[in-house]
Image (tube, rainbow, N blue to C red; front, top):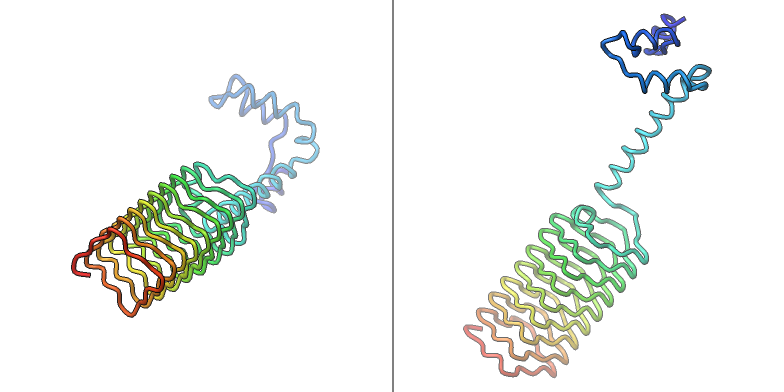
Length: 251
C-alpha cells in the first residue's frame, strides 16, 4: 500500500512500527518527543493526508501575505497608528487611502505613494527619501520634524498641511496647489515650485537656495525672516504678499 501511495501521490506515511524504527532509541535519528507525538495522533493514523493539505494551504496563505506586504495595493488605513512601520512604508503604496492614521517614528526609503489620499495624517519624526507622492491629495496632515530628500510631490493638492522643522532637499512641488500650508523653520535646497499656486501659505524662518518659483502665483502670503539666494520668480505673480526682513541674493 505504501508503495502504491508513493507512486500515485509522490509521498507515503510510516506506520507505528516504522515510526519506532526511524525515531526510536536505537535509531541514529532518535527523537523521542516526535515519536511520542506521532503515536498519539489518532487522526494521523486514520487520515494523515489532512496534515499535508493543511500545510499546503498555510504556505499558500503565507505567500499571498508576502506579496501583499511588498506592494500595499487597495489597503486603506483608518484610525491606524503607524508607529515604527518603516518596512511597510518603504514600499509602494497604491490606491490605499490613509484617514486619521498618524505616521510617527517611521523613516522610509523608496516608498512611492500613488493615488492614496491622506486625511488627518500627521507625519512626525518620519524622514522620507526617494519616495515620491503622485496624484495624492493631502488634507489636514502636518509634516513635523520629517525631512524630505529626493521626494517630489507631483499633482498633490493640499489644504492645511503645515511643514515645521522639515527641510526639503531636491523635493520639488509640481502642479500641487496648496492652501493654508505654512512652512516654518523649513529650509529648502534645490526645491523648485513649478506650476504650484499657493494661498495663505507663509514662509517663516525658512531660507531657501536654488529653489526658483516657476509659474506659481502666491496669494495672501508672507515671506518673513527667510533669506533666499539664486531663487528667481519666473512668471509667478505675488498678490497681497509681503516680504519682511528676507534679504535676497541673485534672485
